[in-house]
Length: 348
Ligand code: B12
Ligand code: SF4
Image 1 (cartoon, rainbow, N blue to C red):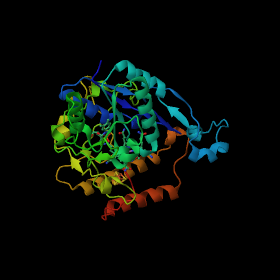
Image 2 (image 1 turned 180 degrees about the horizontal axis):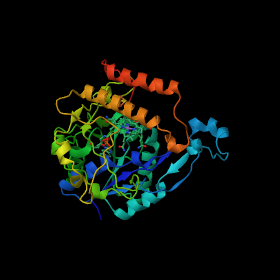
Image 3 (image 1 turned 90 degrees about the vertical axis):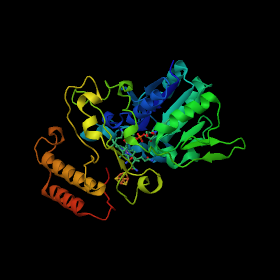
Image 4 (image 1 turned 135 degrees about the horizontal axis):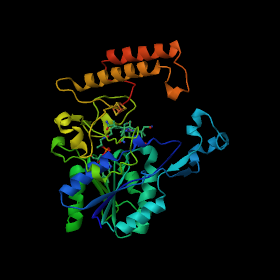
């Protein structure tokens, strides 16, 4: 029976790509609570191919007449609104069987915040004696929204590696929670105690994520094992539409020892070789973060150009891009490499 259960909730959307949902943050938290002496398990609500149609949410109900007809085109991806992952009842039952005293639920994305709350309700139903804590970008930005759900006992804002073990220890010892970084809780009069987001001061002091708790059968790419390596936290950019740099309270930091510590074997004892593909900017010693970002975007644009001009692009279904399209890509690459304002309209 684990002391702590960490849950990645299922999601409801038109599509899901498994490589985007590796529960890296939960593995980082699991390593931290393990180091503090707690037993822990990850219940990954997305580590299954199970999917079924779900009703459109009320704000999208007007789309109903456009969906529902059979669609065999390559764009059939967006054919139905679907529930991806295990059912809320299944997750609740598994939480009940775990008997954990503390259940942590990831609520990373605002668009999927309802699924995190539904998970919390199901967990409380099947395991009424446990404490439920929510963390991730959504409750960090809008803690009162999450706390409005009676099944949520606490929120931890910001990074959880230091905060979650401290919350667990305080709960076990029956101590007050005021000193737990990032914590949000209800005071006896019903008002909320809201702490500023927690920030890990020494990223290199954090243990390696508990990758052994990730169900990597589900996260294979091209029939090989795959994993995520996070070389930095926060973001060096300041896109005008993004809350991260301005309001999250999470500063941009790089991990000093990333390259040597992440040899294939340090990532997984079973790994024999590594093929690296980057979706965000890797750290480069001696180069300013913004420049790293611009270089990375330029390289990505260049790679896309080269790939797109091969006739096999798009799995062989589509021909090479039109000149207008490739011209646009070149302009974009030029613009990205020249842009020095820090107000980019490109993301990640
Ligand atoms: C890499 C990245 C991606 C990658 C990989 C995502 C992944 N598998 O983790 C890709 C490109 C696939 C991606 C996709 C998306 N992303 Co993204 N992504 C990022 C990025 C750049 C870094 C995230 C990261 O890895 N952080 C490091 C890990 C360790 O942190 P973490 O997972 O957040 O976990 C920490 C804390 O959040 C907290 N925590 C997390 N869970 C829990 C649970 C508990 C109980 C507790 C206590 C704490 C806690 O503690 C953890 C350890 O410190 C951030 C921006 C940024 N610079 O931070 C955006 C960001 C997270 N993404 C964002 C969005 C919106 C998306 C998409 C929804 C975009 C879209 N429309 O498709 C998709 C959703 C993907 C999905 N899961 O279906 C937003 C979320 C904002 C919001 N409020 O919704 C961010 C903040 C960027 C932004 N501002 O737009 N993303
Ligand atoms: S690059 Fe992504 S995370 Fe950074 S400010 Fe822009 S949108 Fe936000």
